[in-house]
Length: 78
Image (cartoon, rainbow, N blue to C red):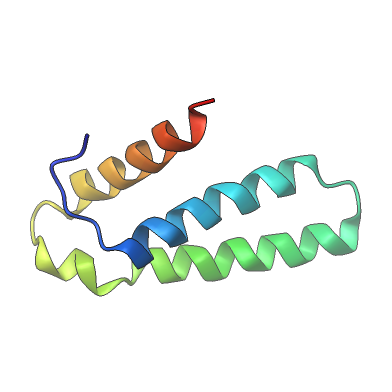
């Protein structure tokens, strides 16, 4: 478990990012791929500019990795 207390909206955005990325990897329709890429860009901005990162100065890179690992490990469970 992570030692960071991530806000729910940040966790939700990271989960949505992974889900959208997975959809993009499986998509065959070029127009839908464009929609998914744009969604990934918006989610990336939402995640990277979230106010939470300002609350942990100097530790943000480690926290960003912890967020990714936390969400990935939860989604990878059967």
